[in-house]
Amino acid sequence: MPVQLLNLISTPIPVLNSLGLDLSVGLSSDDPVVGRHPSEVYRAYLTIYSPEGRRLDRVVLGDIPPRRRRLFDISGLTRRVVSGCDHLVVVHRVPARLADQTVSLDDPVEMEEPDYSLFRSLIQYAYPGRGNGSVIYETPPRLNMQRPGGSPSTTLTFTSKIVLSSSVRTYVVPIHYSMNPAYAAEGHYRYVLLDAAGRQVLDQTVAMPAFTVRALDLAAALPSDRLQPEACTNDELACFSFVAWCADAALAPLVLNVASDLGGVSVEHTHPAQAFLMPRDDKEKNRIKAAAVTVWQQRADRARIGAGHVG
Image 1: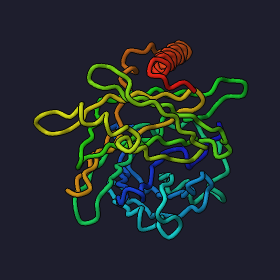
Image 2: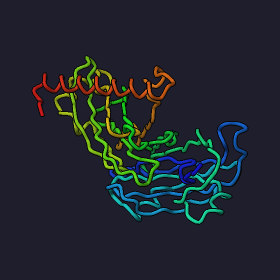
Image 3: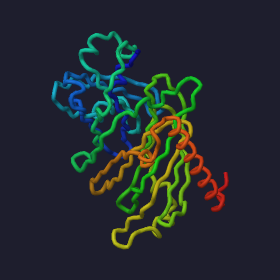
Image 4: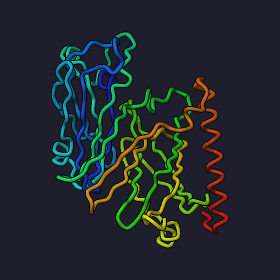
């Protein structure tokens, strides 16, 4: 079967220059599934996209020897190409023996269906010289690889880790990436915030072209009069639940809680809670997910009308 070597092991990552965070990526040559692939030399590459989603450059990060790990400074490489703006990069690992046999990494090669799942990357965001936070993840299987005539992938996001105060801000960062370099769809990510009583206090939509990221500043989007009533007496944190959906693309979200004055960063990429309740059959899973997106859309529409925010 034809295989894109750059898709064997890859991770799409937001570069968050607007938040003043440095990005580093940790990569390993060891297979996390014991006995599947013996450790060998992997060559790491970095594909850099513009804030608008246009591919700008691809650079070689270097080789990772067998049974070794390396931490790469991504911000140091990308700021010479894009400075000040948020944008997408993708880290790829390719077995060096295959890379050496290939004229162009963009050309597919024939090989048996490979399994490099769970080769995750460590993503670290840091305030220079101060605190940092990290998370591990990989590109979801067949991400936005729509079959001819098939329906687009969808997104459904839940998290209760939205905390806002005078010193702490939460950013939700959706990633719009595809394993198909010719992919050109635009996604529309609609998100709502719910207070402790379940009332909808925010409803916004952001358009995302292919190969872009967005840092959604929830404190800036939320009306100031909505913050104080939700503040907890002891820690002055306003806590909310976040729900988002996209009916025309699969978007992978990161959630960052940052305290810039203190130099604190936490970052997560949680497994979708609803996935544990889904059937194994992909068609049935997609049907249920699409139905859930429709229900949340209708609920949000009713809340907008009830609050007088029509249109």
